[in-house]
Amino acid sequence: MVQDPLRRIGTLEVSFVWPAGLPQESKDLLRKAAASCPVLRSLRKDLRVELRFEEP
Image 1 (tube, rainbow, N blue to C red):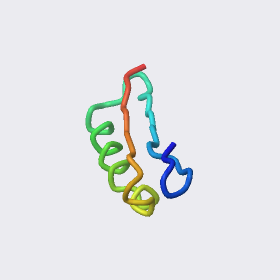
Image 2 (cartoon, rainbow, N blue to C red; image 1 turned 135 degrees about the vertical axis):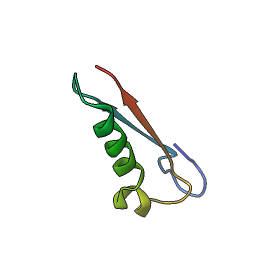
Image 3 (cartoon, helix red, strand yellow; image 1 turned 90 degrees about the vertical axis):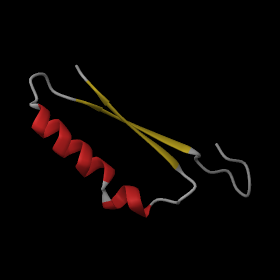
Image 4 (cartoon, helix red, strand yellow; image 1 turned 180 degrees about the vertical axis):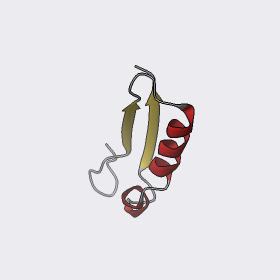
């Protein structure tokens, strides 16, 4: 948590776990969608967002 000026979340960690057998084309498309998500873009600029993509 960030203490100054108020107690706020400093980092948001988001993990995506691919279903088994998901084609690489789909993974690439979903990565692009996650990076350009309008909700992600609406968050405060000082909030660090970490997107992780994992195999099952």
